[in-house]
Image 1 (cartoon, rainbow, N blue to C red):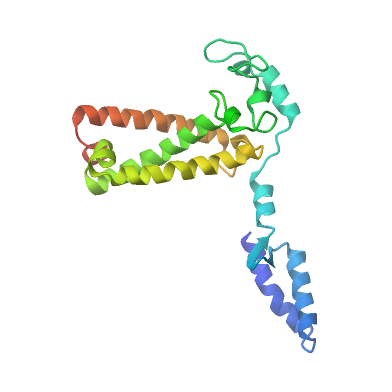
Image 2: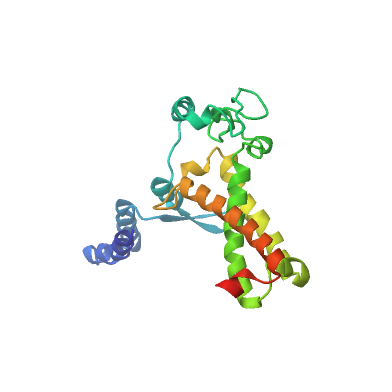
Length: 228
């Protein structure tokens, strides 16, 4: 990535030196060809705004994986955890819960809000896990700075509640849009940031945040200030 940026910056003076007597339009064509050959993003003015073309395609190429219906059906048939729910019920097509994997995934199933927010849908665990991870991080910083418990920050002082209410819709919106477009968290990964890692971190964060609230309700003191 860094090499492409450096090369694209050098492309213009190289083009200019190769044609010192060329007209402005010729030099513009030379530099444009250099940019295209290097695969650098191009900019287009549309509707009064400048839009960078190529950034989304490059991000998709690095981080996105296409999940096919055949892969889902194969996992559904071979994965033991897909053959029955945590309560022992066998998934049935068209049932309220549990649904087969091919019906509950955004890639192949229904993409309505009712489907992705169902008990076995893609949204609940994803959004709750992300909010819990942010909540644990926020609690650690806020308790160190204010010396107040999470409960006091949310209800007594009040500022914590304002930040939380503002944060929830932002995270929910950013999580829902890809699902409505037929993309689950399994379709994106970058380095160590995989869907499996996010799920386990989110689950641990949910347990940790609940434990934090219960602990502070018993000791009546902020955990991160007294023990860390």
